[in-house]
Image (cartoon, rainbow, N blue to C red; front, side):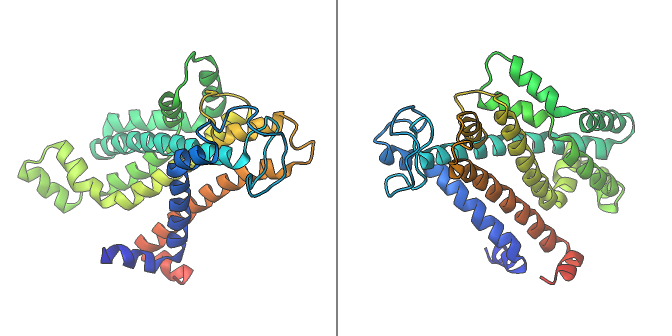
Length: 288
C-alpha cells in the first residue's frame, strides 16, 4: 500500500487521471440505480417519457432531447456502455498483443517474421472501413462480438512495442539460467520476462481502451453497430440526426462529447504519469 501511495506522490498527473477515470467508472457502475430512481424504473432510452427539448431544471439537469428522453439519464447509460466496450475490447486487444509479442519476441526466426507481418498488415491496411463493413453485414452484433471485432484491429501497435522489449531481454544471463534450470519456453516467457513489462502492458492497455472507444464512437456516429447498445457515440448520432444542432440545443451534443473527452484525458494522464513513475529520466525532464 505504501508503494502505491509513493507512485501517486511521484506523479500528480497519474493521480488526476486515476481520480477522473474512477469517477467516471463509479457513475457508470451506479447508472442502473441512479436511473431506476430518477425514471421510476423505466428505461432511459424509452421514447416519449417527457416533453421534448425541456430546458435544464432540477428534475432534468441537462434538459430533455428531441425524443422526450432525459439527457442526464442517456449520458449515464451511454457512459456505461462506452466504458464497457472500451475496457472489454481493450482487454482483448492487449491480451492478443501480449501473447503474440511474447511468442514472437522470445522465439524469433520465422515465427517472429510471421507475427510481425500480420501486425504490419493490420497497421497498414485501412482498418476502419473494413471494420465498418464487418459490423454492417454481420447479422447480429452484440456487445462481446463488437468488442472482439474492434480488438482484432487494435492489437498490432502494442504488440510491436512489447515484442521489441522482449527480444532485447531474451539473451540476458538470467534467461540463460532459466533455460539451464529446465524452465519451459512458456514459463520463461510468462514468468521470467513478462513481469518486467507489467507497467508497459498497462500503458498499452490504456492506449487500447482509448483507441477502441474512439473506433466504436466513429462507428456509431455514422449509424453502425447494435441499436440496443446506446453508447455515447450512439447518443451523439441521435442528437445530430434529430436536428438538435439546427435548433440550437448545443448542450445535448456537447455533454456526451465532454464525457468522451474526460475519458480520453484521464487515460492519457495515466499513461504520462506511468511514464514519469517508471522512467526516471522522463521524471527529471518534467520536473516531477
